[in-house]
Amino acid sequence: MKSLPVRIRPEQRPDHDLLARFARTHLRCLGEMDHWLDAMPQPAALFCLKDRDLTIVAVNQSFYHTFLVNYDIDAKPSHSDAWRDRIIETALAKTTSSFFELRRDGALGPEYFLCTAGLLPAEEEGAKLVLFTALDRTGDRTTEKSLRRELLSDGLTALPNRAGFGEEIDDRLRNGPWPENAKFGIIAIDLSRFSRVNESLGPLAGDELLITVAKRLKSNLRQGDVLARIGGNDFAIFARLNNGLSDCIHIVQRVKDSLKSPIRLSDLQIRVDCAIGCALSTGLDDDPDDVVRKAQAAVKIAKRSGKVEIYRNGVLKEAQRRFSIESRLRTALSQGELTLAYQPLIHLQTGEITGFEALARWHDPDLGHVSPAEFIAVAEESGLITALGRWAAYEAAQALSRWDGKFGKPLPVGVNVNLSPIQMARDDVASVFEEALRYSGVSGNRLTAELTESAIIVDPDKARKLLVALKDLHMPIAMDDFGTGYSNLASLHSLPIDILKIDRSFISTMLDDKDKQAIVRTILSLAESLNLSVTAEGIETQELAHALQTMGCGNGQGFYFARPMPEAEAFDYWRARWNFETV
Image (cartoon, rainbow, N blue to C red):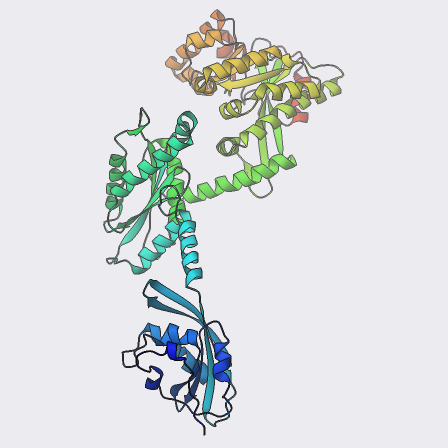
């Protein structure tokens, strides 16, 4: 058998012949193999496995410089020798080829190679030839690593983002030292009024505020805890809880202390307020994503309560229901699945129906009957209140138009439509009512806008402009739930308000509470002084109706007279009580 030399040019040969330290294989019909290997741009070599001994047959220049120059055959095997083991595995396996990635430590850091090992026909009995190639993927892996780092981190604060937070948690849970019965917790932090900083000082000031907050929070973390920015102005902390809730409360206090002192932006001192919600795991086997969702549900409650909230059972279900309601409500609005119910307003002295209040009702095929208090709150939170308010205004005006058509002439009644403070802030309400009146052909004095005191307090100047615009349409204005807000007499006198609606909380228990009777008398006296009409809400008994009639209250509504009813029933109810004289 003729021996096959490995060709290495003189300028490539090292001081001592490395190849001489490998066992040489003598095979037939391979005289040109070294030329074929030299033609390949990537590292390539031919090996022979016989009697479980791997011997080298031929290599190209690239393989020599990549794998053999610093190779020490006498050293202990390491992960850098993995290519030899994989070649042997391929030779012994039933498959004809295999792919694998090789990682090794290089002078400039980790190096990665995409390797292939394939079997070639061998003439010598018992010998197996393996062609090995390696493609350098170090650059690709470095780029991937850099892109992944960018994908998992927040570009502004350099903290982990939502996806990176999840990976950091998984890594801590798998590899961190955890005492027996240890738990973990998620602390969600929402910066309050952050949008005002952006609106008043600009986005650069907002970014600076976020960076400063991130630095302060990070400086107060314990070793092993993880801080992440999981939203625009939302942060979260993953914390080990060796002592359960007490550890969590201690971390919350550190968070509050770190944000106690004001932050200087330009020439201003900004005080950072935040809402904090916490969720604790029951053990290390809990799904971290589930715990994060619970903490976010708790922080939503904290934004309303103004206190630190610890997640309790059922909160996540409530949040999921709100999400379902939002999704289904969006569909219901687009497909016309909501209806208006009409509750009559009764003139207490004559018993005549002076109008109706339009109240939204919703029965969903999946959710069943959804309370207005529930879906209106979701609509305000999600921004759907604008679409809901527009629909209510158009539908109420069209109902009046249909009633007029049935009666043959305009009915001597109107409809009250409620306005949300958020709708007033976000929508051109005056244009909405102008269109509703124009499309229906109904006069403005038959459509009353009801708004609460809180809607006026939020932005008095804007509210005043809106009310003036509505008065230009000849629409009456009613202040709903009067007595529960903080409006003062000066603002009440300066606004073009026609009707005060006394909140049901004063009316329902008025007969048993002299203080509430006094409040009702005061409101009636005030309304008389300002030449305003009064409607009492929540009348549920005949005694209440007679008492308010005796006190001089003009109008009332409540279950004593009628519950809210569909459009057709409301028209029939009006016709049945037309010219009715007594309460």
